[in-house]
Length: 185
Image (cartoon, rainbow, N blue to C red; front, side, top):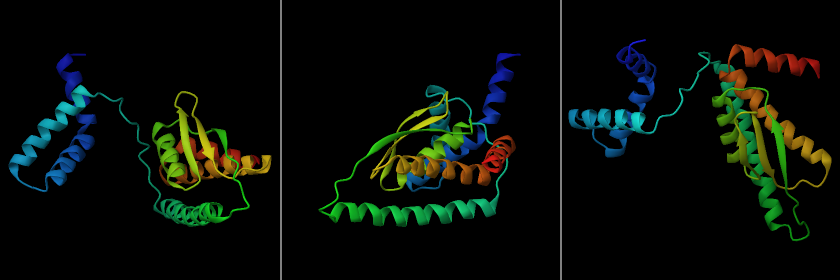
């Protein structure tokens, strides 16, 4: 393939990211002018050429109902975990035990792995300390794990977040794989 054609094709696949970077540039400067549009486009092209990242494969599907379910569960998890962590902080009789749990994700999507990692890390009492992208394993630090049941509960909570994210915007293959595994349980 001709190098110019290859470059043109790569730029076409990066148009959404380039547009987003230009919009972000204009928002950061607080100016919507032709000059900020032009400088934003130059900076966006420079950033994407210098700091090359592999293209992100989007599934092309979005389910608004499951996105709402994900958001509602996330809000509930935030509230519940905030209360639990607050109680641990003020309870003088309880010395919390923490653990690091390895969770094998069922999806191989970088986007799903990233969204699960961010979601888990935003919930108080849990933090992703490492993500093995090649094997799709998250290592999660979990607060207040006194028994093996607590570890299993933490692992299941991460898999539940993954399931909700895949239902909302994962690929059809990931969705079907997770549904099969859930039905087999």
